[in-house]
Image (cartoon, rainbow, N blue to C red; front, side):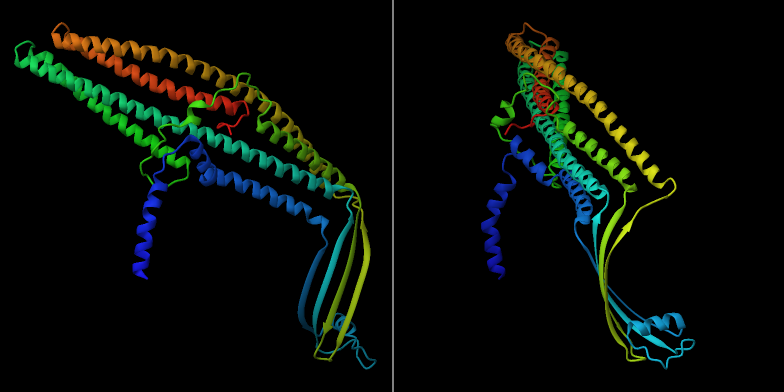
Length: 436
């Protein structure tokens, strides 16, 4: 058995390793977060709780059946006489004032069913159904919010790694310049202070490279956290993720498709039904009932069975401020829900405008930084050649290399910001963050 297990693990381990290290695309990351993230689990359980409330409200459609059993002994004349009658053990020789000790085992099967409740049960069920529908819609909104956060973390990883690449390129360029400076110093063409300037700058770049790698590791950890993963292993992103670079911001965004508005309207409808249920509490209720019981006693060897069935009507006449208070509470909750809808519309409108402007700014910054990188790269190439010929000071070369590194990092930020802003704009417009 041990040999078999070892062979099985040996065969499965490459497959498991390949699955664990498969490159992440944005779509696969979002799908993983929606299925395994704690946020997704919380949203799912909220829906389950709302469905449970609907099931409770629907219980009035079903008959209520119960079974009760109990055993007792007494010498109280009133209670003992009732037990004797229930056991059908009465005879003329019983002393009503002193019947002695009497025991009784009672088993009762009871059935009840509501025939009419003035419409309040139906209103409560409609309110619970509306709340369940709102919870379903809010779960969709929560998952889209989670998708936007995953997209943000995904592009932050790409940005952090582009920053690492930029710092590594800067370090390589500075190392090459340092080697040139060393050769020129040995040949007597460069003073020592100029060579030291390059070494100091190289040390600074290496320090910034360490910081960039640290930020990249933190971005990867944040990404795994959103996916609901506890391990802190390496995160491999797909080199060619078409979905990540292809999804576009909407041309004419609006808040009409926001699911939060649909959920809020469901809550308003539920609040209206709750108000109706509170008002219908003053209506009469009619219930049908039936029961079957068995009484058994051993002190008098009694054994009796009986049944009862009928209809009962109840009309509340006065309950103090109870019903009026419930109606006032339901009216206040309805007014609060309607005001909440208005507030939500304003908030979503502001969010959409902010997202639109943020995407516009990010797109313009990306265009500017792309041009800036091309210019800085050409300037750095020219100054490196001039430095090799001795026509440029080390301080001038350091300035040019610094500007190139900063331009590359700014382009990485702008590229990630544009993708993040596009995802946020899609969510703000009520569209799926990742197009299906």
